[in-house]
Length: 341
Image (tube, rainbow, N blue to C red; front, side):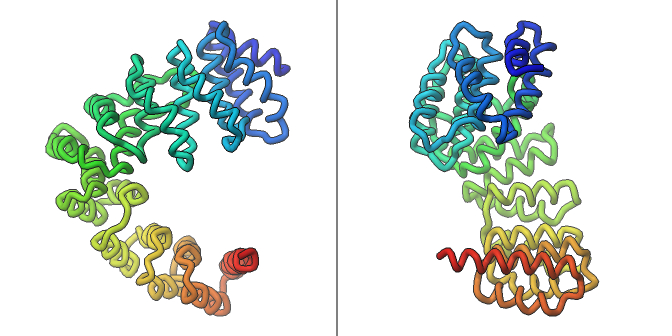
């Protein structure tokens, strides 16, 4: 189908016809060679008040790929669309703006007013986009959505998402003291799953609650499903002394199947005390290859002179050609960065 035909199908009132067109246009938007051809037609569609709301919302979502956020004009566009009469368009504008978490002041200017939007889905997008700046005004929407146990309806053209889980993640990242009591209620609810209890513990831990910290560290030592989730949540909860100690224990326990993940996390959090066990894992030929690669990547992530020395030494010792090549690439990248500086 031609581009005009795809946009015509997208604009159809028949969603069964619109969905395949949206999928095709999304693939095109992901292809740098086709983005230029899409830019003007989709921008025109996004701005067209007479077009169907789902088609306009789709076009707004694609501006994330088609516009440069450093350009002031795109922020003017998103600010205008965030005030559009149609809720789908406002929701799409909020979703796009939320992606730019490194431009907090601009995000806030657009999303703060949407906390009072008449449409619940729009308010929720604003809350999730303001996670880093979460304050009292956002908490009621967050709590109301967490209180409902359903994941939320799928609404075209928005990608599927579990809204309740997204709200839990937002609360975990925010570390807001106002979420402590609601999280405790979740934790005490026997009808909630173990996974939800862990999310509640993560919220408590990120807010500095001692009980939450203890429960979260306990979960890192439990059965595999819960441990896996706990490791995922570390990126939001962050590392304190107890969590660091638990990761080091896992790394040093040769029987623990989560050693590779512990290595990754210790690298991401730049834990200097992990240098010796990481080098030992890297040099051990009996370790699974994926664990040795994780150890090498973690040493590079720690980015200290001692870590780079360890990688240099290990490169000479490891007998695995693929691993030697991986270490060489890490060292070469480090050298390039040093030259650039």
